[in-house]
Image (cartoon, rainbow, N blue to C red; front, side):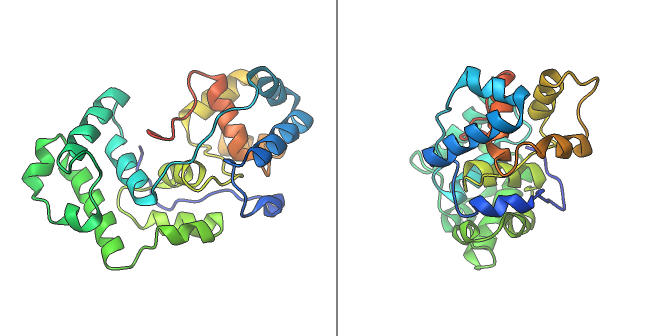
Length: 232
């Protein structure tokens, strides 16, 4: 995962029609499919070909963020191995914040965690312990406010925040324009000469909102592999 400051999410006016709903809701997903087929013939063909996707939210806000930090900038197999060794320090589970903070750094480094990632997870845990961060409360916030709350955590930037909104909160109208997989898929599907800029993506997204998250998942699937909630 990439660490970038000043995270932001493009939110469209029409998105208010589905505020509070989740793309894990099959009715919402079907509505998104109908919308994309109706308003974007190109992406609509992808939706028709692939059909409905099985989508489940990640369990545990804190656990999902710890996992996302560990997976940052690593190949999937290497990240999975480190995550498993990390969990084995705590009987196969991600430790609660207090237990993590009580763990010696040498033990954390022994499972393959870099000093930087150890500090990122420590910052997350400290914010939870001192009540300066309410992860569960993010589900009650609008997209932009949720991203601002996530952005204060060390190692959590725009891309990570957007993945959290999609895969943990199930938000309907998130468009991760900096995701390379999404860029490559859009370039191929829309026969673009180069990877789309943010401005180009926002023009395309006029046909997708308020279901940009569902559009994103179909763009991923149309390319190589869809985003994996367990890995982001």
